[in-house]
Length: 260
Image 1 (cartoon, helix red, strand yellow):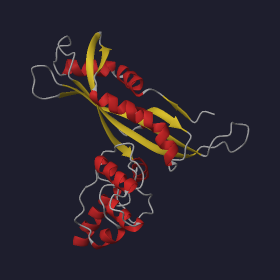
Image 2 (cartoon, helix red, strand yellow; image 1 turned 90 degrees about the horizontal axis):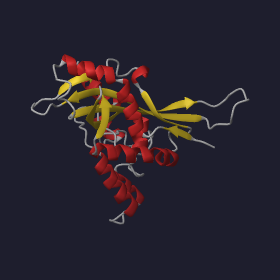
Image 3 (cartoon, rainbow, N blue to C red; image 1 turned 120 degrees about the horizontal axis):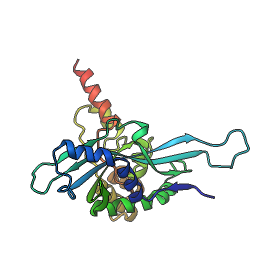
Image 4 (spheres, rainbow, N blue to C red; image 1 turned 45 degrees about the vertical axis):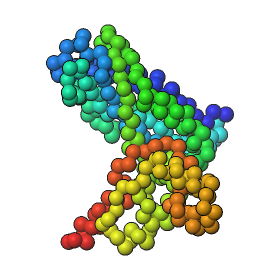
């Protein structure tokens, strides 16, 4: 009956940091930071990834009956830096040499769910979001190199494809007239204007728009309301970092070719 197995987020991060203990100590030595003086001010940059793994069902019989699809949520420690007590600038003491490699990607949660089943996805990832939000505000004290050291975590959800971003930010699915996960362009507008597209969406704004969609404060018709919220029709539950997506990239390329 299990549809998901997962680690607690803080426990998984502790485990990942302990794996890097030697690298962190070596980074401190190479930066000339005295080991005993550096016990606080450590910052850890986390890249999160979440994607559907496609069809994983047992095709030959004999195994347990599982739903057809699986989704994996994972993270990578991108870098560890430290701001010494009397210094102004942070010094990076560890950088992941292969940030996109399968080897540096730590699984946090594996779930048997179709990535377009929004309700189940929200229910399963909800606790992860809560743990992640709690860790943004707190510090983790962990023994590294025999001394307790204080770490802060910064999360960058950049490993999501457009489909996952749409699920998590409450946007309509890929067939929507509002084609972009970062701006309010419709298909017609993007076809007319290949140049002036800027990143305008934010998680907070998506939440506000969902409230408008839910309450319809101006008593508008469905079409008017949909135009007002630009295709946001579900409650966004996981903040994704606005980095350039494929659509803006395509528009940028089109502009270059247009000039040529």
